[in-house]
Length: 113
Image 1 (cartoon, rainbow, N blue to C red):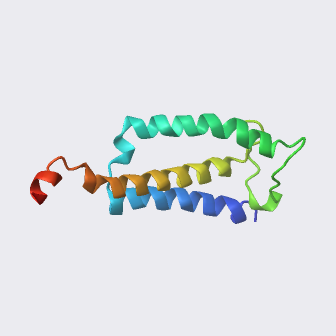
Image 2: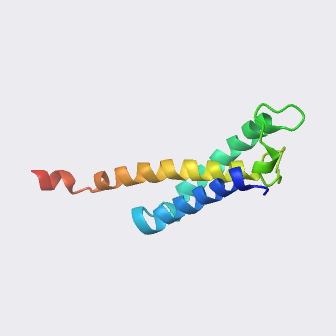
Image 3: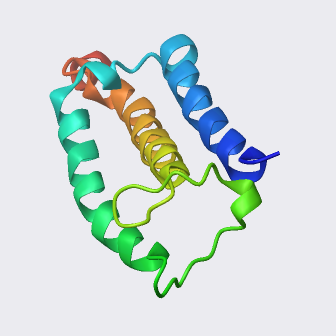
């Protein structure tokens, strides 16, 4: 069965991160323009680096054909790499936002006096 080994975990990672934000963490990250700008910057670096690593004419990273869908775009990048990249970066940003949020209270110092 094609795509089970890498595709299913990649999709599951995205779903898990989105559900984690939506129902558990609730940081509001997805509503912030800075998040989407960050994701565009990540994508801007991911495409050339991942493209160089996975190019079919001289790959550095190899994927078992039975473990991916076989859809590659652009520059031979398996689309699953974008899902894992999204999930990984978003999870890191969610952790950052969650630990940062209590410290954002401008009245925190006044209350401790």
